[in-house]
Image (tube, rainbow, N blue to C red):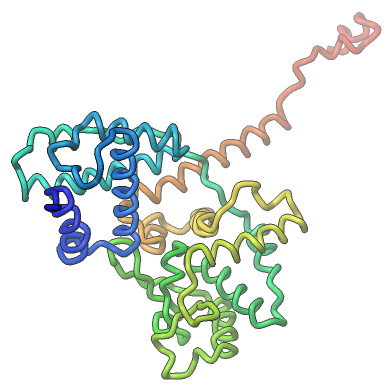
Length: 337
C-alpha cells in the first residue's frame, strides 16, 4: 500500500526536523510520539479512519478538538496533559504548513485552537524541618541508603528537575572549591549550580563508596541501577516516595499529603526566597527561561505572609463581645467605664 502524506510528514517531523533542526530532547520527542499514537488510535476507533487511509486532508479542526475532549473525558487526562497534546499537534502543523501548503486554510484553523485555561494548583513544598526529616530517613550504614541520601539531598540542594538529576554523569560534578554541578536543562541549555560544602561531602562519600572517583568513570552515570544505567524518572520517584512514607510515619504534620519529586525543587526555591535571595539568582539556579515563572514563588510566599499577618492580627484584636454582658451589675460596669 502506498504511504500517505500524513505518514510521510509525521515521520520527517519526528525523525528529522525535531532531532536535527529543532534539537528537541528525547523526552520531548517521546511525548510528541505518544500524542500521535493516541491521535491515530482515536481516529481509527472513534472516526473509523484507519491509519492506512489517514491523510493530512482528512484531519480537521473539529476532529482535533473532539480528540482533545476525548482524552479528557475518556482517558481522564488533566487539562495540563490536554494542552501538552495540543502543543504537539500545533508544532506538527506549523511544520507541515511550510512543506505541504495544499491545505493551508485547514492547518491554520487547527493552529487557531486555543489552549484550555486551568486552575493553577498551589505550590507544594516542604518546610526546612520537613526537608531535614526526609533526609534523615535513608540508612547511611547501607550502600543503598548512602546513595539515596546523596540523591535526595542533591535534588534539594541543586533545585534540579527529576530528569536533570537522572541525566547526570560523574563528570558533571565539581567537588573542589568552588563546589558546583553542571546541569543540562530544557532546550539543552546548560547551567552551573553552586553546591554547599555539606552537600559535596555527602556526594563525595557516596562516590567513593561506589568507586565513581576513578578517572575511568568520568562518563559513568552519577546515579545508576543494577545494570549500571542511569536511574529513570520512575526509579527516582520510587526512591523519593519510599522515604516520604517513612517521614510521614515519623511526623505527618510537616509532610504534605500531596507531594512529588518536584516538591523538592519548589522547596529549594521557596527557602531561597525566604532567605532573601534575589529572584534573578533563583531563576538562574532553577533554569527558568522567564523571571515570570520564578515570580510564582514570590506570589505563593506573599500569600503565606498575609496568612501569618492575619493570624497575628486576630490575636491582638479587641474583644467584640460587650464586657457588660458578662457583668451582673450594669451600674457597676457603667461607673467603672
